[in-house]
Length: 419
Image 1 (cartoon, rainbow, N blue to C red):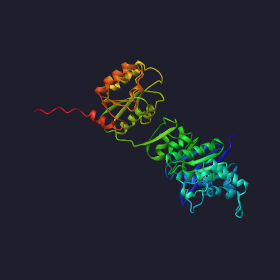
Image 2: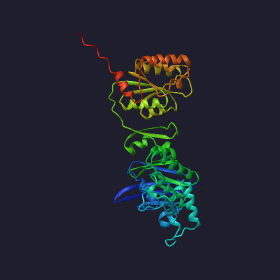
Image 3: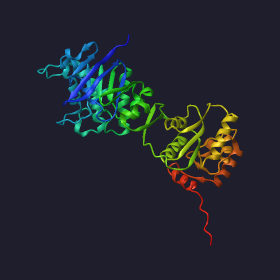
Image 4: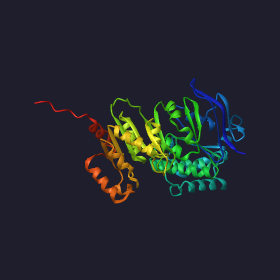
């Protein structure tokens, strides 16, 4: 039977007469990492402060394990939930070890100023686990931002609770420290800890969290695995902007890109040939520039096909790891022939050399290459010769210079004036 470490039932909270949380219900299981995502002001920090007992909800129930939080003393709450705050500044220059020792406060009386063996063991384990042993005597004000964040995670570990609450644990950290902190939290979750964290970066949240809860205007808009929550249908109303969600090329986790919906004011049709990240970027750049874009053939599961679908770009889909049938080839040939420009975006030349045939069907092919041709050639020397001939007669552009190159190539030729 699943063990809920944290449960919220129809929780509503108002601050200064303004509703900040409205009827929020969710649960977090033992050994689960739940990420809270949403725009600024969505209520993420308020929800975390309600879980750790700092705020009392106006309605609804918060349970820590089987216990309603309103039946627990502050000390008892602190033995259930440890918090890593967003603001890790301190008023005095405590040592790192002193900061970690603060995590033992729930287990000591106000007159108990000497640490016992349990305290010392918990502090030592926390320092070791967060790789802070060598910094234990350093002033907390003298360590880096990433080290300070690890010190506060160590304080939470010394608190020895089943649940961790983290408020923007990666805020203001550079990318390597962001990954270090989230890797540490993920490892703790794998060992049975429960973690709930407000995370601003949607890509990091998708990469590390088991489930996501999307908050907007104080309401829970969606909850589930990252693939379920991070869709444009959920994100657009929450963030008030259109998004493209595609699998990350390295991790496979959803990756979110906010995009502006441009005016469709260019009277030019551009077709994109190619697959993978380069084709995906070409499709996005041309769509953002206002061109009428089509693409394909693109194999099922390809990154470029995912981008095309997110942007409502018409794409020719083909089965993966299979040859193109005649109907697909005919449709692609017609698109290339009718397009004002055809972009060959890092095209892979297979044994059938269909890409080169399709390029020949276009009146204005443009080459965009980010990888050497030999890495994309599967058809031998003859294909290399045809590709070199194609290079000699077409425009070549970088991915950054693609839009100006297309604009220049699609400007109607002006007839010379009579003398």
